[in-house]
Image 1 (cartoon, one colour):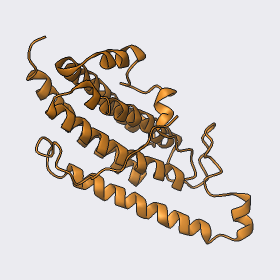
Image 2 (tube, one colour):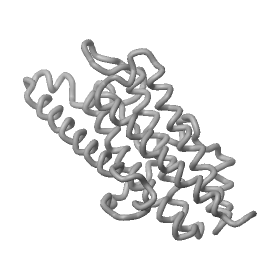
Image 3 (tube, rainbow, N blue to C red):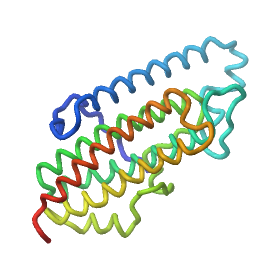
Length: 232
């Protein structure tokens, strides 16, 4: 089952001093952009004749998975849809990993980083789900990480390694594996842009580039933290 996406305060200062300025603001503005796009899509749907709405309920066309169908004239591609769907699963596992920190006695600094990753990726999952739904495509929920495998995602054995660790050992496992996980997200963006015609739709393009900006910055922070851990 999907775990709860808890509302959090995006304006909190957790780890803000570690990340380059402007990243949080860009993601917040992107979220507002998607919310407006979703509102406009909803208004356009309700403006259709009632008979057409009954034949094609909002979101019913491609909201149950299966084959991806791109409508004629769409300015996005199948690869764009697959990227958004796969990144939801990817982000969902990162949130699961981040929520392990508190109960595994992580250090205060790592707990702050884990909270920030949780916050940002919850917001980004909502952005991706909204984009998919506004384009009448299937939007996975947060349980999707258990059934989808994307670059950098942890194996069951790696998750068990994290779950068995406490304190400094957990900090090390979390940092090593979250770096791997973030690098997988960067590979997903690279693969997207390497696909002919993909990544050109404006919202997908902006979102993918923001994933690179945020996760590259967080990789830098995590490598620094890893180097500062006491020897094993």
